[in-house]
Image (cartoon, rainbow, N blue to C red; front, side, top):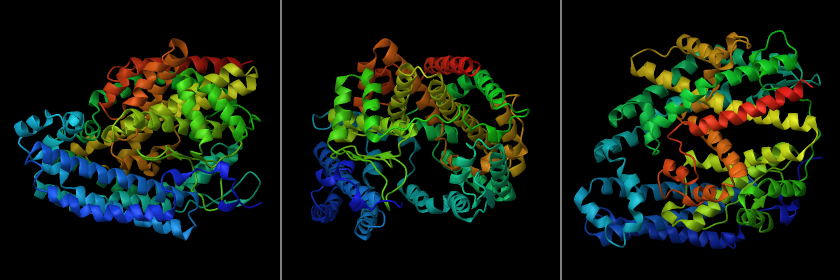
Length: 595
């Protein structure tokens, strides 16, 4: 049976975008209005320093344009996502992307002009009643002053951005379009073209022949292009180091993390604590080898479940019940928001023909925080639901408690809210079941998630640090040099029970995050903080402190926001707590699998 069309989806299982705009016509009117307003911003250009009133008026005009644009973007983007084959919505989505370029161009003068203002004058302006509420907003903006170049040089760098991004674009084209992984035989004897998506599925197969064949076929393709991938990655690293140097940072790492208001010490503490706890990962790898009953454990054996498939079908209606029960420790006020999401059609639930794949939480300051799902009756989908609900409630509470200019939050904070919900769901499932097999399945899923997020992403972060330091020291980033370092790093992380498969030394060729500039560490810090917070919520009735973080938005620096939740991420204690949970659950799984 084929997928149903959009028109066949029951209305109660679709999101209600009429609260954003009542109709396409209302959207178009707002679109036309914003285009008419854009030229009015030009009167502030060159005049922000004239007076406190002019600066305030210019700021508010800028924010008003951005706020209106966000509503337009949400409506067009989500209409398109619900049915990408719909020509009307495809046109609206393209239209709003063009508008984004116009808005960015017209508002581009604001930050450079503020940064160029006399500091004493600006400080005096910020003490006036109208601008006082924007103090932190300007503090963040001004923190870039020491790293902002004269306007002419900034213009040159902006003009060169496409050229400097060409290596990353080349990697993307190679990785997504041009590389050929060959054909593989599936479990049912069918010959299929191997893709990255199919590869991740095949690595979870119980059939070791299939895992090995997929692994060998995929890496044969990457290794054949190892020198090309070394060239694209090396060029990207050179770009990061160049931009850090011209902007007066000590390193590309410092440039990447401090521009997001995160001290480098957070990054370094993560690496140190993970290295200290690698023995736990080695234990888990040893358990995996024992349970799988293999003489030699290979890298393609790290993803298959240690527990036979558990028959755990979950309808969407049942998933809503589980979500409410699992999130109950967060309090009735939190659950009231979850119920609003369920009852007021914030969620687009089922798959339909043309619908965007995957899941996300979206929305803007003046809209509901919507969720896109493609529901299947599996436990994984229950995790997806509570994950996205974490983002949605975070957005809702931020917007209800902060003005527009603080009504969002940085990526460093975003994943903590969603992953805390997943941790609460894991705790709930472990406490609710007496079935050892289900319990082992949940424990295995948790340990694999922690392995993939805290350990693996920190491994990536250590590799990122090394390649940037090598380039900064004038050492060439050849394929051989990177493979040698990465192979040894992989062995350090996974320990002596894992075979040193020669292919894994080239894993760096296929990781797109290495082109993102010190981004991946935030997955690890977020997972660890969430694990710690969930335990504090459950064991110490810490929900109210936790919700302080959800309400804070970007009203303070990220580490200050996390302190309101009771976690000091400048220190390593939150990581110690997270590893203690990992160890406890590893003990539980070892005991269950030895029964």
